[in-house]
Each structure stands twice: as structure tokens, then as C-alpha cells.
Image (cartoon, rainbow over all chains, first blue to last red; front, side, top):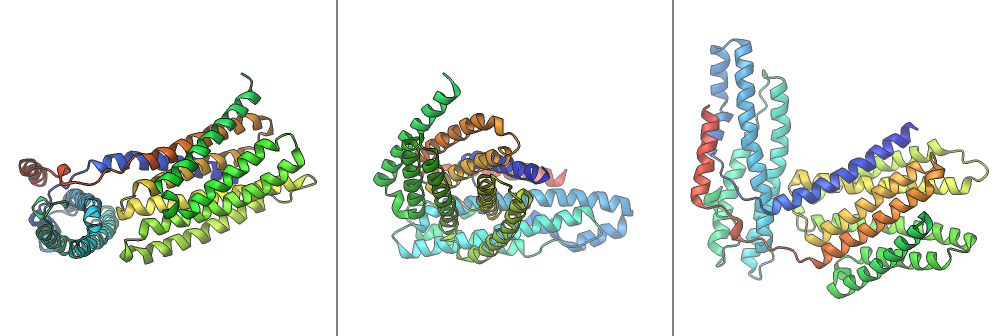
Length: 172
Length: 246
């Protein structure tokens, strides 16, 4: 009976997952690129600031503040992750372009965007651990440079395409 | 209308919808890109037609059911693999990682499937039917589990599903999940077999509609029209800054 329950729960979860995917796909179709303030993100990731706060604040105060910082950082990471997914979707058309150079650049952008998405997953995991244990220092420092590289590639693709089918680099 | 006549009506509706699906597959050239899915549809259609003609001959129907379900399960898993290939065909960087996750899921679901079969054994005197149902339950669970892994991976990686791949995945996943629930419940509620069969036929007809819909509705091309205006971007930016400074 226990196995039957597990199987039924699995099947019901699957139905729920498929339904959510249909809804998300519709939502994603209208999802636009949203801006990310990289300077502010850099400030949030700055460990010197954190060390300063650790020295100046009580342990309890530091933990509370750090959790707040992590909360904001998570929003940034979430936004970057969503932007990366939107870049993949919007660059699909360019990837099918008859112009080889445009198609190749689009493929590179898609690869980079998926890598960023993976970095974001890692960032979510690490930030979650830090949220639970504020004394730990696990913030991923590789995320911002990757995002900068994506911006550069998008600029390049925008310059290559006569019809602008990809998001503008200024938008992110 | 009684349960029996409702089931017959749904069965016939399913046959018509499946014939329509085959027509759509042939005219939209989806079958070229999804040969396994096309084979799956043809085989299940033939099984349904033969099943309807043999419905008054229980022995022949049983043999057909066993052969048809075996083919349907094997082709179903092949369709899942086809979805996997299509989903990651342009994502070389992710393919290796996705393959490992997929392989891990195959092993895990295989083990769980064996456990499911093991819990139903021994099968007793009239055991062949219950043994077959157990194997089918394990196989459907395998199929559903793999589809779940694919959808979860694509969400995590932020991959975009093309219209046809998505339709195939959602349709197959929905039907297999409902069938899995039916297979899990049937041994515990044999008296409800008629109602469960009714639910299964409804889900099958809905699945055909899902597939036809996703194959016929053209995919919206991404365009720069959805991109935000600069003023809007600045507003969002300011809101974000306020959030940071609060």
C-alpha cells in the first residue's frame, strides 16, 4: 500500500508539474529582459563590506543584516537567471539565421546564457546555505564577470544583425 | 447513457481524434522530426482499431492488449529519449551534464520499478494479469519519472521548449501519469475498473487534443517587440535601487 501511495503521489506531482510548465511557458513568452544594476550587485558581493560589518555589529545584528543582504542578492540573481532564460528564448530566432556569423554568435550567446543560468543555480544554493549559516562566506564571485561577457556578446550580435531580433545589450 | 455506452463513445471519439492526429502528423511533417512519436501514434492507433474489432473476443483481445501495451511502453520511452535529444540538440554545453542526470534518473527509476514489481509478487494463480499490470505500472512510472526529470532540468537550465517538443512532452506525460494512477489503483479497487477506464479514455482523448493543438498552432516567433522601452527600464532600475537602499 505504501508503494501504491508513493506511485500515486509521483503521478499526481507529475500532472501538477506538467500543468505548471504549460502556465510558465505562456508567462515566459511575454517575459522581457529586465535591468540589473551590476555596480550594486558588486557592492553586495563585496567581502570587505561584510568583514567591516562583522567587526562593527553584534553577532545577532550582523546575522540579521547579512540575511537582508542575501535576500536582495537573491533578487539580483533571480533577475539575472530570468534574463538569461529570456536571452536564450529571444536568441533562438537569430540562431536559425541564414547568415552564418549571426547564427554562430547567437549560438555562443545561448551557450553563455545557459552557463550563466547554471551559475545562478549554484549561486542560489550557496546563498541559501549562507542565509542559514550567516557566518559562512560562500558568495559566488564568478557570476558578475560572466554576465559582463554576455553583455559584450549581445552588443556584438546586435551590431551584426540588420534586423534586430535579439535583446539590446543596454537593456541588461 | 450507461457507463458501457459512454466508454464505447469515448473509445470511438479517441479513434477519430487519433486518425486526425495521424493526418496532422503527415501534413505538418512533424513525423520527420519525431519519427519515434510518429511510430508511437501509428502503433497505438492500430492497437485501438484492432482492439475495437476484437472487443467481443476476450482471448484474442488479451493477447492484443499485452502486445500493444508492450509496444506502447517501449515506444513511449523512445519518445522520451527523442524529446531529450531535441531539447538539448543546440545546447552542447549542457548535453553532457543533462546526459548524466538523465542516466542517473534511468538507474534510479529502474531500481524503483523493480521494487514496485517486487512488492506485488508473488502473483498467485491468476497471476499473469496482475504480473503484467505490475510490469506496466513500473514501466509507466519509469516513463513519467523521466519526463519529470526532463521538465525539471529544462526549468533549472532555463531552456526554451519548441512548440512541437513541448506538446509531445506534455501530452505523453499527462496520459502516462493518468494511466499510472489507474494502474496503481486498479488492484486495490477492482470494482471501480469501469470508472477508471472511463477516466483513462477521457485523458487519452484530451491527450490527442493536446497533440493536435500543439502541432497545428504555429509557434510565435520571438521578436524585439517584446523588449522593454528605455523609460520602463529606468523605472525598474530605480525601483531596484530603492529596494537596495531601503
